Length: 458
Image 1 (cartoon, rainbow, N blue to C red):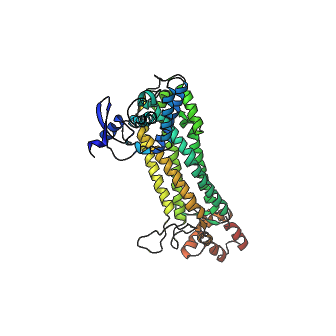
Image 2: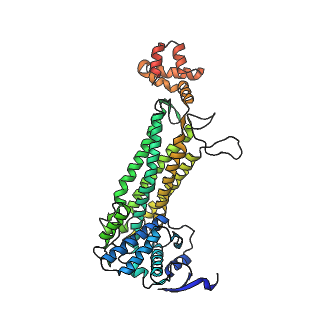
Image 3: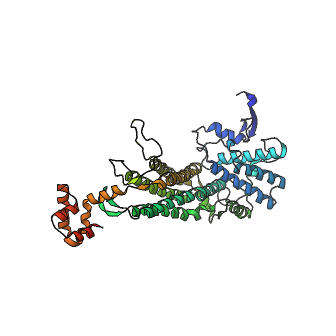
């Protein structure tokens, strides 16, 4: 690109060249030039939540008489365009930056100021009449705005995307529990035959796992609903109007329909990221639950002729590049991989939580990135699992019945009648002879046929 493709802007460190068509300015460009670490960008949901703070802050600063009405209106309009995703391409700073997220924060402040100036004067860029720090950032700091945006974006996406997806998965599994209530099958412990149960009982356990996951996520909501906004630099609220935080957060709550509120203690809210760590722990637990369910379903549907084959999975795509006719359990395996990613993200977030030194956590960008990725991945995985897999599962009743009849674990039902040692001898004889437990009991006349049928129906 030639020099005509750039414009020169000044910041506290001197002159820097900014792409001519960009809304952002010098401070953003320095962050991009000096930290080319990978190509990961902050999630759009996070940027939109940060812009929501700016839009609400501009309105409240106008009401408080701190921001001239025409400037406040331009800032609010520009911030609203960011919230709507109209300026997504302007957010160019990578995840790996200053630990407070200041680079991303100033990227946003500059974009909003530039667009507001364009609205007012027809020219983008610059710091007049709207200044990115003096006007867009009025009453705020990266140190309270970034943690607030983490909470707003995380809780919003949990409510809007993840919770509905988990509810759909729970409903789908619960329907299968009812549908399979009369399908008797063999239970398994230690990967060995155990006593009989129903396929419906097995699926009811899966449904309850998902239900508990929903409850765990709901339990963390009160902590995510606390916002650090108003604490400014270190929690003392320096340079912020006494009514700014309560009024701005109340407006954010009305805009989102979520009960956000001021943090009980700003020093905790800015120095620690415990709520994010807690939320990630709940997400990890959901991931572990989904992996267990997906893996069980994968095994139960194994075969079709040389596996367990107790359930039939819907066929989505050919599963082999070399073996014709082979169809793999695509969705369960995708869900298991999502779980692995979420568990890894939790480790990163946990380490990030350790980065709270004195009055500020300095690993907020990577916490935000991984937390929102985990929420998005689980929401997508749960929805696909429910719709593309669980809803289409059917029971292979003949296979289930055949496994029960061949199982040696049926002798468990004989213990109260003939004792443990004698029942064990029946099992050994059945195994050695290749006969079923029923055959041994009948042919050796150990018990009457009517009693055998009653005892084996456990």
